[in-house]
Image 1 (cartoon, one colour):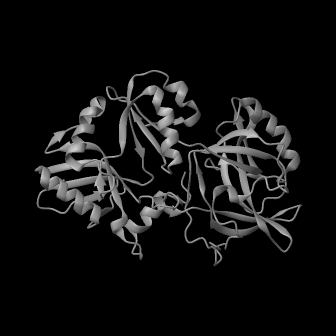
Image 2 (cartoon, rainbow, N blue to C red):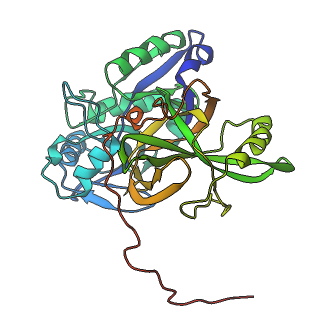
Image 3 (cartoon, one colour):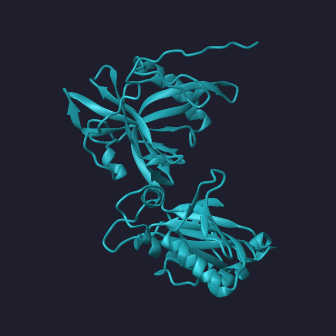
Length: 373
């Protein structure tokens, strides 16, 4: 599956060839297993966690029995549907119900079955290149009524040049996006609204860029309106390297060292290179596919900092939305930190000052150290 920016739809799909367009659900991708005489189960790969007993699974099992299916393996999405007058639930909302013992009713969860892997011992993976047959078969097996707990994704076959208007309509209705397939060949494209967020640069990483020194990535931050003892409250938001041109990487290396300040906490990039902190003066615009609140099923925590105008002070860790596939879009010299250019309200989360968590409540100690040559 590849991604297509929403502003490229008309350019990518200008003709009249038929495309299969179905809703993209913001849920948890799962495998669905059925065998006669056993409870229906869903599981994740490669983690392997298995869940049974969900009402949506009971409905799935009833559909398999009614169709006379002995063994089957499907791919689907476990999701929480949107309620009238409320915002679209995120995958985290569904995960919280399906994984944890909470007051929410697991009967609210639904299964969108979008692919057949195996049916009564027959391997149907080759049908990716003739997906219309799979699409029709899923309608027979699980139905198309999205008001039920188990169904085929909502969708239709449209000419290319109608995809853009269909996408706009489903996004305005509150849905996440579309999955597009070529019925006669293996091509799967997801389309979601692009998210753009302004942030302020508070750090950079220096490294080799095409054979010469340059900036490999930038550490950005968002700000809260509330102050602490007169200091501004900031929280690290996204580290971005994609989207920077070679010229910008080299030019930034002339600019950021002049803004350097002491690091409030030791931080490195994924290659172990030191993040050098700078004064929060340069604003930029980021773009991404989505904002999520978990990272590998764990709550996403980032560093909270106090800025007094000359130095940062580390305050602890706090929950923070993560921008998926963050990419540099452009500099924003028209915006300033004082003018609210990097406000956290852009993410749609609570803009009150967060409660930080001290991850090192006791002094760390080396338990064992070994050196190998």
